[in-house]
Length: 161
Image (cartoon, rainbow, N blue to C red; front, side, top):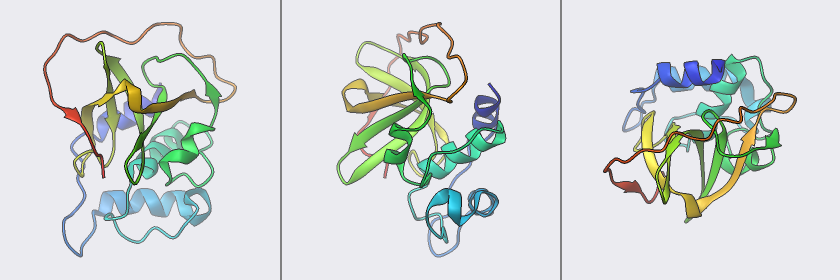
């Protein structure tokens, strides 16, 4: 999956604290444009998990969600699918939402590769109970392979803002 290759290659990308912004993150916004993002995106202090997913999906030549910068917009994008590696997963959180790509699971959590997770692109654990949608690109057949099951410690993200 081209979008996952792109996502993995960006692990470690971080927003810049303070008044400056990451030139990498801002380049994603510029390439996608205001129409795809649904807003003028002027600084990386604005939530960018949806921007990250849009950048990766677009790198595969696929259409993005309308108002792609909003995590919740991804909950109706594409088609529903069972949890599988590379699926777009949308979560609820106090004050908003979060979106990323599934990479694994344990009994109660999903392992998610996403942007704006502690202000960076990385993998983190998020409670399955917070998931509101699991999606796959329209017109593409999702793999029938279940998510890898991890038996691993690690803290669980409570707020990806």
